[in-house]
Amino acid sequence: MSGKKPAVKLEHPVQMGVIGGAQGLRGEVRVKAFTDEPVEIGEYGTLYGLDGRAFEILDIRPHKEMVVIRFRGVNDRNEAERLNGTELYVERDVLDDEELDEEEYFYADLEGLEARDAEGNSWGVISAIFDFGAGDILELTQQGKRAQLIPFSESSVLEIDFEGGTILIDPFAAGLIGEDDDEDQDGKGK
Image (cartoon, rainbow, N blue to C red):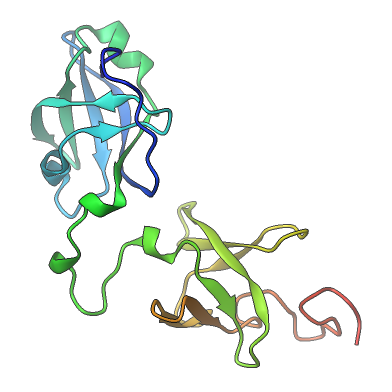
């Protein structure tokens, strides 16, 4: 963390981890990494907060299911404690697509895809992906309408077409329409 570098505005941020509590007295923090192996978070170079702060890793070591990191400019426990809850990001283009298997993708790549049903009706655009503990959730937004949340499951999301910029959803399985629902997707009666 350094006030010396100008703040960086990430165009396509991908969350790599989140800072937890302080570890020890010398400014180290525990970090929950969202990489396959927690120590791999150190391979992405400088990490950034959404506020543009840069977090340069000076030292990293495994600790249970996470890592302990010492960042440049964080020199005592008080400074480390102030970082608790800070989300850490990299720019999307830092991630290596060649490491992915054919069926794999980054969740960040889903954002901006349009959700359509089998009849071609639009249900909105994926604006965020959440995990509240019971499975991943997609947020669909449409201009002038309230955001809708759907489960990111095989029964709700039938197909992902990155080239076409869409996902095919089953609105019934996704909970967007009910069994006895006489309303169409716009909330207007038939």
